[in-house]
Length: 503
Image 1 (cartoon, one colour):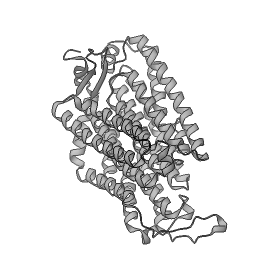
Image 2: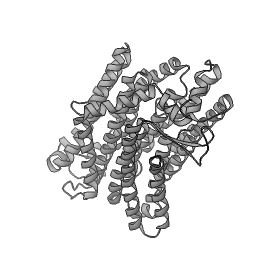
Image 3: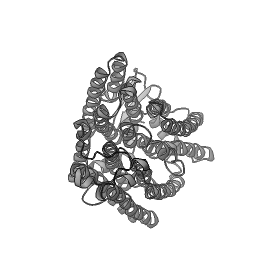
């Protein structure tokens, strides 16, 4: 069943190609990409089931023996990330049908969306450092064009900031890959794990690991490398913001987890100390930024940054329970943040603005939308019994178990401030009375009773249902996260699957 390793890349790639061939028919492009994302979700679920059944799967493309060939590999973490990509891919594809205007569709929105998913899935499945770089570049090119598509001034400003810092990350990544090849003579991650594990930590290896830490830190938007994210994520159409919120930074987090549990393990204490400080500062600065903002999507953008801190916290603590907490947080956070951006887009569509001072009255007029906001918002804040509570509980317990009381205190404080941030959104957009329209003050006209297209409401309902399902199935989900964490802590099975029974 190694074909399951190829399908998550081939399916969106095929959808992108067919959409390009249907350039003159936007309707056909929509259908192709929608079918492609649904097939990607099905392939992701099948891959997760198979990895659960047989263990780590690996495939060397072209028949070349590892470490010389292009390797694809999937453990539980990879398979989980592919499923998340499929869920978000389908939801945002449907949402985009109603919210992405015809001009952007004519400029290639649908094939670019599919190409973005190709890059994301490739990054999750590659077993090679250089090919990870290639997939990052595929993702960067598609995301940059999607961010700038339409040519609005705010979009172009955000896109330039986005691409400038990400190009720096790419340069650092490529430099690190070149130095790593010079030291080890290979870029296959499983092969690197074997070769670097028997080498005494040296200044050069530590320097290379720091290069990767900075490169992936920029991609993941950790402190102090995060400022490109809140400067850009509020500028494109909501469908683009939502898929970015759910997937792009998670690829950076995934890369950090992968290389610092598989490749760079010789000087773990130094890297873990750096990551612990980075996680704390990312959480604090992100949530303080959210507290200070007064525009719906800007608040959510800073909350993305804060959430990255929780994900990195589990890697920094570096225990099975902590990594399980990070994985569970990635699952919950990806879905919740995507849904919050979709809800934010619906609010902007109804009110004509995302400025909180000009919003209000949605609880009385749109109670269904208010509930769809509350579910992911309360989960993000860690309110029991929603999924975010269990992820944060695992991280707090892991920190207490190894007496890292400072990071636990920071996590609890940030959770309270996250609750304050989402309650601010609730109070301003939903609870307070709707402001009177004042054209002289530049206020957009309100039509809060307007009918929302089902293609807007259905994805929000589906993602809210996913959040509830994760909460109800907290025990089996946590068990899955623990098994994934165990594979990361002991990569023997991963190395054996890629290199053979005797790595």
